[in-house]
Length: 400
Image (cartoon, rainbow, N blue to C red; front, side, top):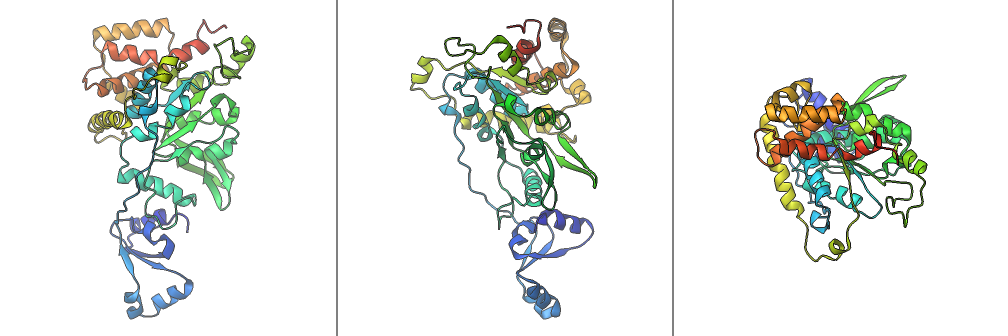
């Protein structure tokens, strides 16, 4: 039965204290605290259950609120990454403040390697987050049989040939089904080879990236799904993937420009960090030293998230990236020197208000990582350094 957890939750909200569900869904239904759950194998069992009070008592039941330990995931470690300290730092900031991240660099530079390690530095899944994920996966018919909770942060990595309907959601067997974006709830959506996704798929991300929910309109009505995830995207600098190495790249300037402009400015503005990943040097490739471990990075992320949890206590947001204008004005105040610095940056780079606000939110996260109560020029400068790709693609100097 799809949606057992959501259905039992609705029954409890309606004032009921128990429910009878298919036996295979009993574990999932038992997640709802305070509900008596009885699992039956068949209609015959249900008849027997209802035949008498004695039969009713004989059926095995579970009390809601059960917890289930999930097996730890095997996620690749950041210590395997060589010579990409700038990009690893960007990944840390993205995880700490739940900031969308775009990695651009030649083939083999480590973009996918970094992206696939980000789930390993995210904080532990809270019960509330796990229940949110479980409800969605149950409705989609993707919850493993017999499991009470999904138990892990999703990592969704669809191929670039995916349709916009499959990415966002749409009609399917049994009605409206969530796409890859909603299925990444409280986890990571990784879009590799971003310019190769269809324009409708890429542009369809604009509203949910901003609002963190997705509305699907159909003749039968509108359906709203959560779209609250960390979006990581990767792209090559040109169709062949080797630019700016002109010994290997034979793409024409117009081909390179056309390929890069497959990512519109509105989409780039919705990426908090746009990082150019350099090729790994021979010395780094041959180094026997290990990079910073995922465990160490995760500790930093957890500390920064705890600061944010306290900051936003009583507010309907959890991370810096979710701040609206009101929260930015309250929590991203600048002193006179920092205000003067940002005024120069705003005018020099002709920033949009969206980009300006993203810079402030990113700087807030950088300050949290270093334990700073105030946002200083070092944090603002670092935040600005993660916007170089946008400037190169759409600034006045963008001509190749």
